Length: 179
Image (cartoon, one colour):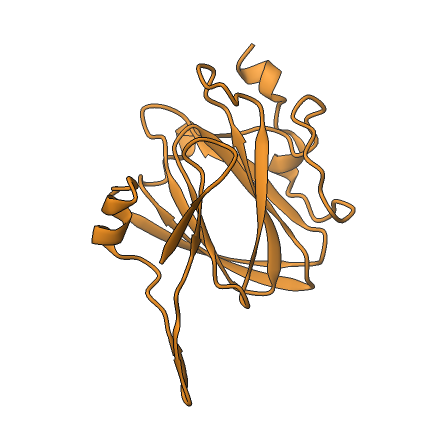
């Protein structure tokens, strides 16, 4: 695996190094030793699998509040997504900034999203499947988010936004949760 730092501290794009042969490929998607060596030592306790239908559909931007913040390792199994992370750490030099990477079944890359970030994605194809590793258990009472169209954050979604859940339509702005 190759680990690529991004413009936001702690956010890392992970590129697999598949071993190809006539049958297909084998690719390591997680190795504790390699993640530790890259400074991403983490204990994964939960795995989630999502299917999203409809090009333009957005899920997010979600995070989990203290005392159960969660890091995520997100990979797209099929289709294509624009995967987005927003730095919501008030003490960070990139607070309120966002970064995005395209994840797809073809590029097989993953995005490591540390605690202190809100996460979401837009489906760029008619259907997409994502697999997430999570560093903490889901705690509904600590689940939170910021709105996909926060004018201060200013995410440039590549497609018209569609398919929002009722809950995602009601999320507050970053300024409303961290004044």
